[in-house]
Length: 222
Image (tube, rainbow, N blue to C red; front, side):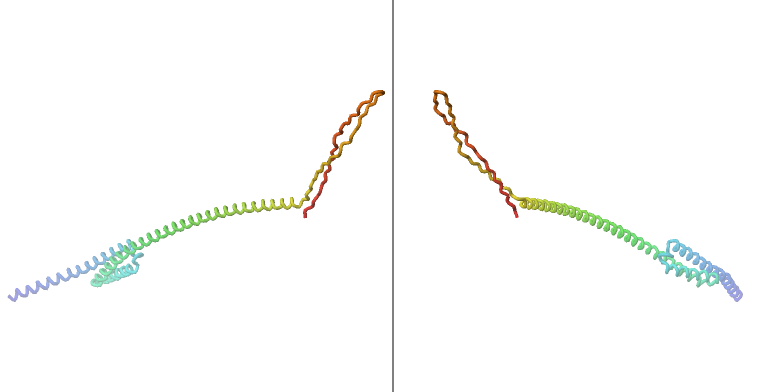
């Protein structure tokens, strides 16, 4: 029995000695696997733009991966696994933040573009309205100018008419008076004598003599 006990104890010790290198080998593999997974996630986040859109979180993930690699090189397996897992978590967080920030940035850019287009359209409408108002003002000014020219022409015509009236009033007035006078006809006697015959004398009425007298009176206007 004692012999069997000694044998069993020896077998147990041998098994423990054999299992210990296997356990150690498993832990180093786990550390290497953790570092590889962290490296893949960090690289994926970098390609997705996390360095730009989640810079702070991405920097922490990169720093944890650097520490994990350093610990692996020093054969600090537990700390390697811990830092590698931390780097993986930060890389996932940075990737989510980057996607969210990119979506928000794209939305903000779209809103800014729409606002800019709306601003351009509003300015175009304002320019069109200003041009219409300027055209209306120009048309009104032209109409006012035409009315002013008509009024000026009417005033000139009135002034010309008034000048003509004044000129006519300034000319002297000549009055012509015609007086007709009639004078008595002069009687003429016609007698014919013959030797032995005496005839009766016949009176002939001479035509009436008319005398026309024209009197010109010149009147000066002051």
